[in-house]
Length: 473
Image (cartoon, rainbow, N blue to C red; front, side, top):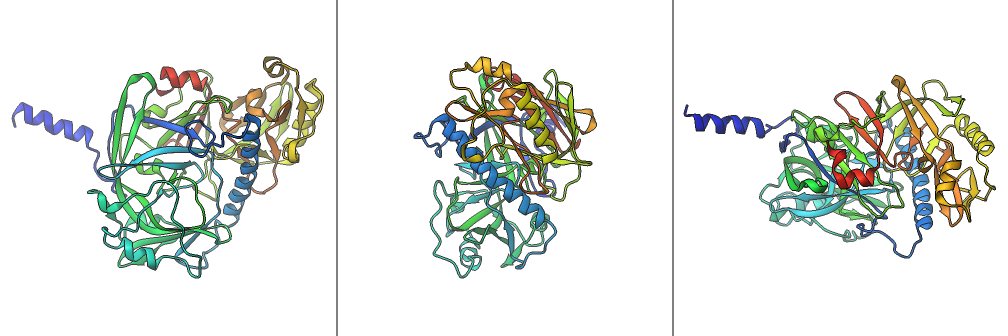
C-alpha cells in the first residue's frame, strides 16, 4: 500500500470513532471540548427577568430549589414503582438552573436546552414532522387523552424534514430498551413523559441525529465537535408550558449525553463544570472528555456510591466540620451532587448543630429569613462585603474515601434580601433525598468520571479560569 494511502487509513482509524451500542460516532480533538454553561439568570439567558434585583433572583432560585428537592424525592419514591400505563414514563417537573446550546441536524439548527444533571434522556421540541416518515403519525398516536389542545412550544423547533442525517429508532434497539418505558408505533420507539399531575407532558419518537457543539475554549480559538447518531426524543406534542427548546440529560443513565459521548470512544464517560459566583454576569463552563480532568491544587476525590436512581450522582457524606467541631452524619448517609438545585439539603442531625455553631461564631445581629425559607440569617446592612466574608468560618464536608471539600462563605451564605445574609443550607424536608446544591459548588471545578466511578472537587476562580482557559488543561 502506498505511504500516502497508509497515512490516510491511519488517520481515519484515529479520528473516526465507530458506532457503539447506541450508534454514537464522535469526531473530536484529543483533549475533548467545552461549551458555555449558562445560568438562567445570566445576561445571556432569554429567561432572565431584568426587573429583579440580584437578591430577588437568589430568592427566586431558592424557591425553585425547594420545588426541585421535592421532585427529586418523589423520583426516589417512584423508582421501583411500575407505571400504570406501559407507554408512560412518569416524571416530576423539575425547575432548572443551567442551559447549554446544541446544534442539531444537517444543516444544524441551534437550540438552547436545559442542561440537567438530574435527568438522562435528551429531548428536543420538534415540528410535526410532515417530511419525516412516522413522526406525523406519532404526533396523533402519542397525544395523551383526554387533554387540552396542545399549545405550540416556545422557542425554537427542530424540523427533522430539513435534515439529511435524521433517523428514527426501532422498538428492538438497545436505546429503546434503555428507556424507563417505551411503546411501538409502526415498529418505531415512542414515548410519553407525563410531568407532575399530568397537566404537563411531552411525547414523540426516539430518534437519532448529528449534534454539533461549538467548542468554547476561552482564548484558544473556536472549534466545532460533531457527534453522529445521538439518540434523543423528538417531541412532537407538548401539553402545558415548558421553558427552553428541550432538555439535555447529563445524568448517569445509559441515554444521557455523557454516556452517549463516552461509550466506546476516546472521550471517556466524564464531564466537569466550573460555576462562576451567582453575582457575576458571566457564563460558566462545561467540559467533556479529557478536558474534564480536575487537576487543580487541592483537588479531592470521592467515590460514587450505588443509588436507587442510576441517574443521580450520589456520594457518601461522613461528617460536617467547623473549626475543631465535627458533626457526624447518620450512618451511610448518601447525598446527591446536583447542579440544578440552588440550596444544600441535609438531615436535621447535621443542620441543627451547624446552625447553633454558626450562631455562636458569627458576630453579626440576627435577621428574619425572607419567607422563612432558610434557617439562619444575619443583618449585614452597613457591613462591607470583605468584612462579612472574614467573619464567616469555613465549613468542611468530609466525604467517603477520605475526601474533604471546604466551603467558603460564598458557598454557605447568600444575600436573599438587601442587607440580609442567610445560610444556604436547609434541614431536609423531603426524605430520603439530601443534596449538595450549586451555591456550595460555586468557584469549584467539579468533575464526574463515570468510568472510574468518582466525583472530584477542587477550589478554582471560575471566572478567571474561563478567561484564561486554565480549567481546560
